[in-house]
Each structure stands twice: as structure tokens, then as C-alpha cells.
Image (cartoon, rainbow, N blue to C red; front, side, top):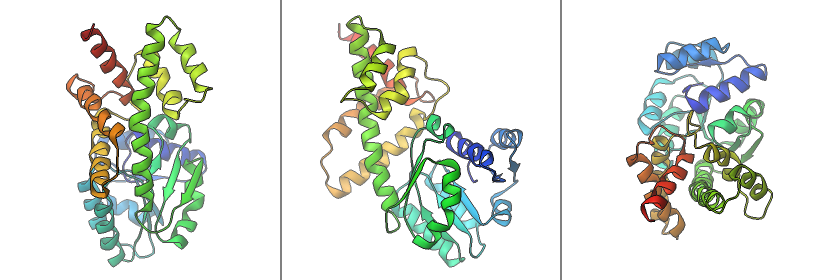
Amino acid sequence: MLGLGIMGSAMAANLMRAGFAVVGYDPVAACRHRHRRAGGIAASNVQEVARSTRVIICSLPSESALRLVSEQIARPNLIVIETSTLPIEVKEAARKRLAAAGVTLLDCPLSGTGAQARAKDLVVLGSGERAAFNRTIPVLRGFSRAHYHLGRFGNGSRMKFAANLLVAIHNISSAEALILARKSGLDPALAVKVLGEGAGSSRMLQVRGPLMVRRSYLPATVTNAIWQKDMRIIGAFVRKLGSPAPLFRATRAVYNAAMAQGHALHDTASVCAVLEKSRRRNK
């Protein structure tokens, strides 16, 4: 496992529970120490991970991180499962660099939050070489509840962008609905339960609704700072294709406000706090 942050550490924990020995590396010492305490093997660098396994999972925070990783792995017949949300052209460049070293890179972003990752409630959106993907299925089953092979390399990311466009909208619509319920005198916790059973439900209401009810946004399952990166990538992809996305564009202001109001390291459910503050200002 390369990257032992919110998602990577959760996947590693589930893989260990499934019986896998997990060698992990993260440049942050605290992440390595946490992995070791959880029963994993903490490596001192990327190359040590590559020498120790036949399958690597990448959960990386940035384009530069993937570029560095792809430059440091050179072990023929190794399969790398790249789960990060990054531009397709960045992943394609990494795929070519690794292919020159005999390494197969699969584009396999994940649908799910950090909380869902801990509960093994992730969906793998896989793409790339089918035979290599099939060889990784036992690993995928170790940390996810479902996996799909979506065709050529990059299709996993294309599906992820569509998935996260919905997440951006549903997260804010959940906050709007719960604020309305609270303002009208309803118990917001009961609203999460009842609305979750109805036609307007979403996984964001179910996953982030409880945080909005408690007005408690730490520890974060996905921070607003990380989400800004995803929003930029999706926005660029939408513009490139000329695809209509008025609701997605409307959410940008709310997420930007969350950053400006000190919620950078809080869960993205904190958009509820932003909207509540906006409501008070508009009275």
C-alpha cells in the first residue's frame, strides 16, 4: 500500500482483516507508525514496497505523488492498482512510464468516503488490462463490497468523475434538507432516518447526514481541502467535454466558502455549517 492516509489506512486495515500481509509506505512518519501499530509492515520507501509484493495499491494525494511513485517502481510483472482521483492524462503518463519497466498500471478509483472505506463499503471503478484486473480480484474483495471492470484504461476515472459530480450535489442538497427540517421544528436525526427511506434519499444523506445533525465535522472522512482537488479535476473534465453541469457549478461557491470559513480540514459535511451561517446572515 502506497499512501496510508484516510483511505489507504482503512483499506490496509480491511485487507489485514481479510488475511493479507500489508506492506505500506507513506512519507508521513505518523502514518507509518499507525500502520505498524495496526499490524502492518511499515516500509521505509517505495522501492521496498515494490520488492515485497506482486500487487501494489496506490492511494495518493496529488499528481506529483503519482509521478514520483511511477518513477521509482521498476519490477517486471508487478500490478499497480491506482485508486486516486487524478486527471486521466496524469494517470496515462504514469501508465506509460511503468509499462516501460514491465509494470501494469490499472486505473481503479473508488466510490466511497473514508467512513465507508473503514466499513468495507467501497465500490472499485476499475479499468485497464482485463487479465491483470482479474488477477487482482481477491485483493479488491479484501477492501471493497463491489468491483467493476469498465473497459479501457481511463474509464474508471471517467465513471469516478460522474460519481463525484453527484456527491458534490447530493452533499449540499442533504444539508439544505436537514436545515429545512430543523428550522421547521422537526428532529433532524429523525429526518435523516425518514428521508433516508424515501424517494429523495442518497448515500450522502445517509453517510454525512448524521455529521450534519451533530454539527460535528471531525474526524473527517474527506476534508474540504482534498475535495477542492477533486472539484477542480471534475470541473476541467466537464469543460473539456462541454457537458452541461449547472448544479455542479452552483456547488462550487459553497465548497469555496467552507474553505474560507476555516473548514479546510473538516469533513465536507461542514457545508451544512456554511449554509446555516448564510441563513443567519440573510435574515
